[in-house]
Length: 81
View 1 (cartoon, rainbow, N blue to C red):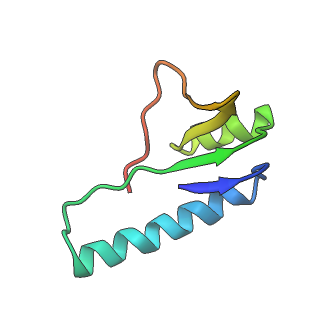
View 2: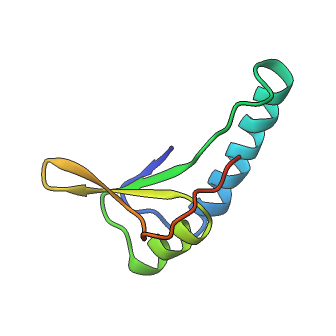
């Protein structure tokens, strides 16, 4: 999970790169069949950034009062790394 106060567009490809590195490490050293699902968390999400994160296959988690809200459309399919 990538946590930002206010996610930016460049955070999405950066997070994809990090998850790909993690996936390769797990394949080589741990369990090759293990799956990784990503999320990006932010206190403030611009609509466009949130839409791009969802399109990239990430769950988006935002602050909602004292709790967190996972926001994805009904037809959302997370990207498996």
